Length: 416
Image 1: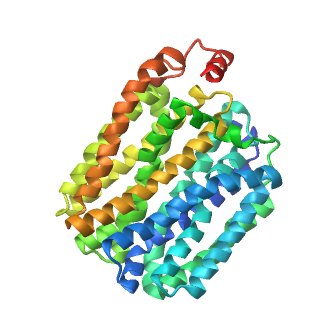
Image 2: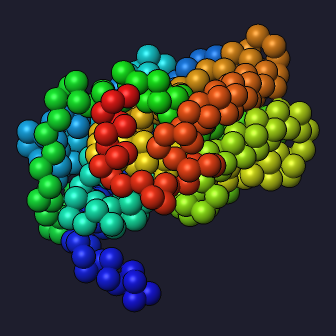
Image 3: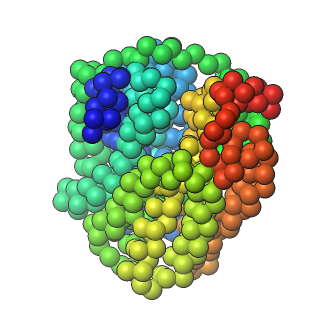
């Protein structure tokens, strides 16, 4: 406890809290269509493929909007960029409340909800900006815990939609978005660390094999988390015939595991190495996904398997970002931001794969199998790449080099 108080005193705790709350509410809005998908599907009589595509639109839009918001933050500051984003979210939610009357309108609403998905880089940078280097990782972890907003969406949106209608939920969400906006205005202060990266600097890691390797692994870990969390309310409702509220509650159990275990993944990686942790994660994800597809007749078994799968995905997210500062010690924030953007695009794969599998094969099994195969491919790539990684910038298993200096790692990063 004393150590945590020291951490809080080393930076600006109110800004960190404001960043967490901002990210938490934005994440909840980002997955709102997924949480209400059973209601929307019923209203417009959607096919399985249409359901999958509808759920994927906010995820893809959010990933693509992360970079423009990051650029805006460099010109007007992270606090102001966050306020602009939240203002746009309120307007988007107002559109959803007043004007949706067709499936096409829902798709347009999905694009607008993507505005909320752009918050990742700004929230983490704002939350950690006041803290010294030795505490930035913890600060980013606390701000990043805002992905628990998924839990808020799947827990509260279905009962509210049942009581007041699903379009009303957009209006209620717009009202509650005022909470993080007020907190941001009153308590947050723009951090002193000025961040100005050119476009080339921002995407620099994607000119390297390691950058693509990290991004593709994040497609599985974070893409799997956001994609499954958005699709599970539909899956539970359609596959097992549970009520829409119960589908949200079951999804909440899985999503909560993914959010909680992310920190544990980073902790384990510090001790056994991020490569070892990711290897175990990808094995667990592949196996549990296939078993989820085969256990379609048992609600209990499927729920437990999803909880295990989400725990692995959360641990994988923490493990990957244990490796990022080892590989890019000088440009950790920039590399992490770009990897996060590419990885988020993977979230659109699962809803579409599941919808197409159900529509054309009559079962969700092949959607699960497709993503499990992707996890196996990433595992093979990781085991091949780690041979070079452990000879250059990491110890065996992916632990930090005990004798390597920051400058030597930086020199390697610049030479690669």
